[in-house]
Image 1 (cartoon, rainbow, N blue to C red):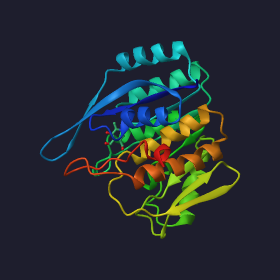
Image 2: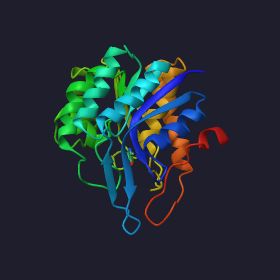
Image 3: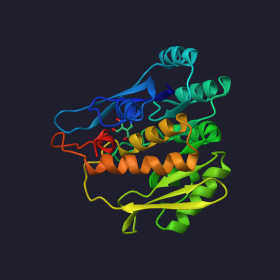
Image 4: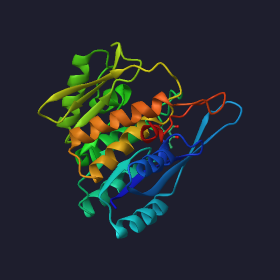
Amino acid sequence: MKKTLTLAGSDSSGGAGIQADLKTFQEHNVYGMTAITSIVAMKPETWAHDVTAIDVTIVEKQLDTILSVGIDAMKTGMLGSVDIIKLGAKKIKEHGIDLVVIDPVMVCKGENEVLQPENTDAMRELLLPLATVTTPNLFEASQLAQMDPIQTLDEMKEAAQKIVDLGAKSVVIKGGKAFMNKEAIDLFYDGHEFVVLEKEKLQTSYNHGAGCTFAAAITSNLANGDSVKEAVTKAKDFVHAAITHGFKLNDFVGPVMHGAYNQK
Ligand code: PXL
């Protein structure tokens, strides 16, 4: 049984964060372990997100537990502070972890504020150079590449090149459903070839947790021995099924259905 780690936040509502990661790991038949960096609760009346960072010493204890067991691949998600980002980078290097998916979470869907701008700089400088693959959305890609908002496929390619120049071995930029094109376009780049991954666009807004689920599926596929391109391509099918079966949880949020792919 392959083993995976997610270093990420807890989404109490169950669709994103470590909850999405664990459900996705399970669906891929890998054994998931978690180091929790932050806890997200939502105000019942407004669903405004309330993020509490976990003390870095407690994150380190969790990582030491998991890394004493050993892992085949890992992912990062919401990282509550620069200290946690530094810790993650240090542990990846110390343990020589070579299958690393960096999901550079900066905002939660429906929230406009970047969680902490200083985290973006730390991710760019400390984590990107350690990434087997990083999975920014358009906003995150423009922040990492220090570009204006990305509006065209050419600008997506420019951002992908910059992100690889920053040290990531490969990148998949998620166009998402807001992107101009009529298909849902993701762009994969490994420093050699650009691959445009297209799927029919789903108009549902029940897609909370899609980004975490995509990155966790890539992590699982890498742990199970896939090449990066294969891992990304299969993960896109997995998350497409999950979004197709997204559902209304309450008046504020609709998560993806993490188990949909295997229930087809
Ligand atoms: O979808 C981004 C995200 C990641 N991680 C956690 C979250 C969210 C958004 O709600 O709560 C823990």
